[in-house]
Length: 401
Image (cartoon, rainbow, N blue to C red; front, side, top):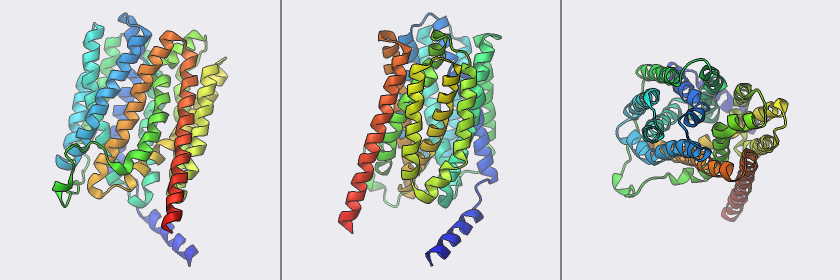
């Protein structure tokens, strides 16, 4: 009987389509906004250096962006339920496009700091919204798989965006580069106008909403875990090009392509494993791969090691991130999906921001290699916390039984 029930569930899952018109449109919009963003990620530290900034200032420039996005997440979560998905998403895209276009006319570090804050506002609104919109569109029974595919849109952008940005830096001015990045964001904005947005579910009793409602409690555990993982991403995105130059290691453009290719590979199976088996079969294998990748980057003797690290990090992060996001939203009430995504992305941003700020200080006091050894330690902490959470949940289940 159980085998027959499992077979019926599998048939039902196949009948629930993921690749609908709206899902394709939101994936395309997500691709273009991420493409424009990823082009700026490895080139902005070089721009800061051109303006006369130090390694510490590079960390501040990256960190202030993520912290401004972080502060907007709770507002974005509430606005998604009160003002609607379309309003929040398109407002965020518009702010992002204008801010990135403004980079083209910046001539001082002080003005860059201000515009990075504005860019973080747009990013916080748009990415919280798009994650919630994708959650709305994807069938609940295939959420892990669907969010994995949705993540591919950003991952494909990651495969080509950083490399293209770095390649263009030597051939065109920063002014032209940032205008091109803004143009990609504009394409995302135009695509977003064609999506049919679902109406948010209203809370049956608004009086029960706490006054300081900034987090969704059911999403806290996976969100804490993603913080320790994205902490490492701040070191890769911000300082890896500089680390490779210091070590005389070529192939940094290829790193991002290899990383994204293995992200794509992980998306083909990790989401399905999560839907069928749960996060236990995804999280620990994924974090082990990220840990090894960080240790290899700390060592970094040659290009081969750089690319092996890229593949391992891609497989690990590509497996863990959508699983944690699906975990974050699965237990939230229908009218709290927006807040669950806001909570998840708040911790996501906090990890990147803390990583950028702390790693900037580490680079100043020690060296780039120490950044990645510290990142490996962060992954180890996430694994310890995860095991503790699993054991605690198992103990509670045994008590209830």
